[in-house]
Each structure stands twice: as C-alpha cells, then as structure tokens.
Figure 1 (cartoon, rainbow, N blue to C red):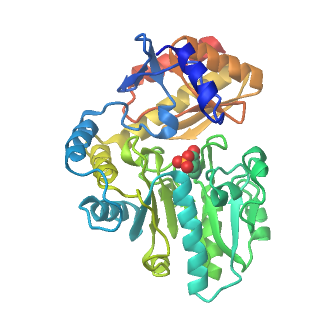
Figure 2: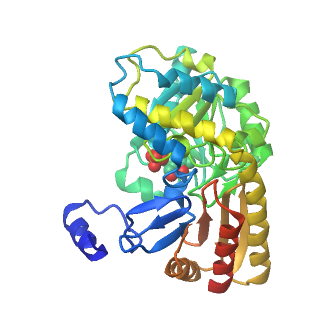
Length: 395
Ligand SMILES: Cc1ncc(COP(=O)(O)O)c(C=O)c1O
C-alpha cells in the first residue's frame, strides 16, 4: 500500500482524530523504522515513549512468540501466571505494595482517581472529592483523565468533564498551598511533564505536595506514564526526589508496545478496594504481562538505566551547546533520555522538524515550540551525534 492510497482510505473511513506525519511505516528494528519502499528513519519519538527497547527486540519477540502460542487472553475471571509476578516485581522496584493492571495510560489515571475517591470514602471523608493537577499537565483523554489535563482544546469540546479538579501553577509551591485544602482527595503530578514540554517538577514542589497530603490524609499520585520505567535514568522519576507517593500510574514502555497500564498502590490505599468495585476485560492479560516481565528483566540485565543516565547527560550537554550557539533556541532541558529543545518560534520549530524528517530522523513537537526527544534506551552515542548534527544544520 502506498502512502497516497493509505491517506485516501483513512480520509474516507476513519474518524479524523489524527494529524499524521506524511510517511507510512511498515517495520522497525532497533532504533530504526522503515517505510514500505525501504526508506529508513532514526526514531527519536519511539511511539511516544513506548518502544524503550527499540523495535523487534529479540528477547521481547521470543516471549511474544512463545506466550502467543500458549495463552493470549482469558479475562480476569481466572488465575493466570504472570499478573502477580509482574505486580511483585513492580512493588519491589517502586517500594509500593500492590498493582492493578489495565490497558492504557488514561485507564491507569481513571483507576487512580477512582481509588482516591474510594479511599477518601473508606476513611469517612465523604466530602473529600477534589483533585489538584498542574498547569500544562497531560493525564489522558478519558472523561476523568481529561478533566485533569490542562490544555483547553483537549478538555473543553467535551464539557462538562469530571468536576472537582483545580490546576496549580507549574512548580509553584505557594499556589499549591493556596489551592490545597481538606476537601482534596488527591494531588496528581507528573514528576517530569511530558506532553507539557519535558519539564521536571522540582524536588521542593514534590516534597511539599507530599507534606500537605500526608497532613490531611489525602493521596499523592505520581503519573509516571511517560517519565517512569527508566526513562529518566531511575526506575521511577519520583525516586529523584526522595518521596514515596501513594499511587503511581504506569503504561507506555511497560509491555514494549502491547497495551498495558498499571496503577501501583500502598496497602493502605488498596484496602479501600473490594472485588467488583473496579475491573477490566483485557487488563493484565497473560501475553502483555509476560512481555512486561521480560522488559523489566532486559532493563536490569542490559543496565539500561545507567545507560539512560550516561547517554542522557551526554545528549543534554550537546543540546545545551546547540542552545548556546543558535539564537533560535530558547532552552535545552530534561532528565535522562527525556529531553527537549525549546525554540522561540513555532514556524522555526516546524521547519526544523520537517528538515530532520527529510533527512530520515523522526522527532516530534509539543506546545508548538518544544522539540521533544524520546529515544529508545538502546540508543548509541553515534546516533545521538547524528541527531545533534542534523539539528545543528537545520537550525
Ligand atoms: C503523563 C501521561 N499521562 C497519561 C497519558 C495517557 O496515556 P494513554 O494515551 O495511553 O491513554 C499520557 C500519554 O501521552 C501521558 O504522557
């Protein structure tokens, strides 16, 4: 199928929710994606932070192949081997106690919000229903998650969304204190905002959020759907701040491209949930959980967190040099392999993105002016150099 025929068919048959790149892709290997004619792209988007191990990773394809011949799905009516093993592993890595598995980031957020409300009720705090989220936060597209998503164009066409959400100015401790009260059931924070422009929240802000929530018995949710599972060089981004949240949401890289989300919770929160209160048909299926266990094993076996730290700081220093050299760049920022180059002008950002694509390099933009860089953890220094050289030339 050619690009033109795909475009024609999609225009006719799909609800028009996406503004796609003008390329078609047929397969991938390592850090590269390939078009139907064999055109190769170096991918620094990784399916929006999903393909952390790259494409067609041999350990992942082996588990996929083996498990798909045994059992793909049975529903959550039965016991299957991998859910509890994965929950145990995630608990050991995070310091939280238990997991609930679902199919996407938005679903993980929905579950975290529902668990927060249920917990407040179980603690006899019936009026405790407010949520605090941050300006520029992105928590997903379902009715609850989108209510806590700041950008108006994602939220307003679907109003009224879930009531009770207030937005705190990004990283503003004074504003957090002002908006926090005893009616807040949870504060929800991405330790590094992704869609919001690769912005790490300060240690001070997270610690104050932890202190305030602890004082009233409200919960702290860390949304690690984009920044978690090694992307920042620690298994969880909250671990940079020395705090422990009550709930953590995960998704993107968890099952190497299969849809799998998770909420991790402390025992105290989990006690508020009893059978039948929440669930899903597909979530935590044996195929996705078997793959996720392998993803976690590969992260450890191949020391990919150390690699994300080392190559991330190398990449950031190269981006900072670009920022110093080119007047069009406002700032380079990020943590580990979650990086961004913010330009001053949207038109220039668009042109840079286009020029890179013409050279076979895929990056994306958030908020118009931010070039977002989410390479796979298996990226090589030479591939980073190639992208830096292309950015330099395009700028
Ligand atoms: C931080 C964060 N939370 C939630 C979501 C929603 O995840 P999904 O698109 O899987 O529903 C995303 C997706 O980009 C995200 O980056």
